[in-house]
Length: 105
Image 1 (cartoon, rainbow, N blue to C red):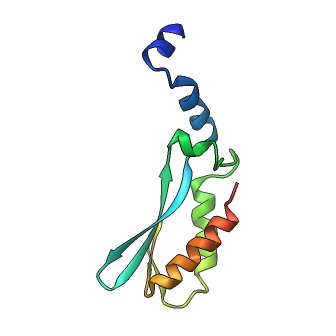
Image 2 (image 1 turned 30 degrees about the vertical axis):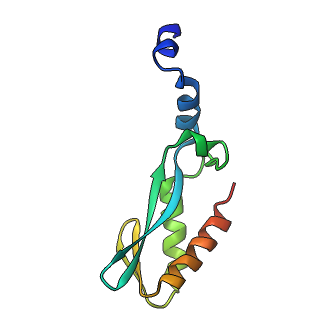
């Protein structure tokens, strides 16, 4: 173990991140006339101190919650497992606020 820590000083931080899983964030991009929202896993251990993912929660939980919420929204279309197209950027930004409030740690 001492050799591993000598070769990689951040070993303990990385182990901690792997125990708690990724940070799920919403990312926006533009595709044609649509604003694309995608749920993305991040493994930055600097952020892991602030935003802890509950080990019982998975990316699937985040996606399922998002599917349930956006099923009622107008002008939103699911395009992939973790991706939605919004007609209006303002609506995508509004959803990100809701997402961040729901999954805040």
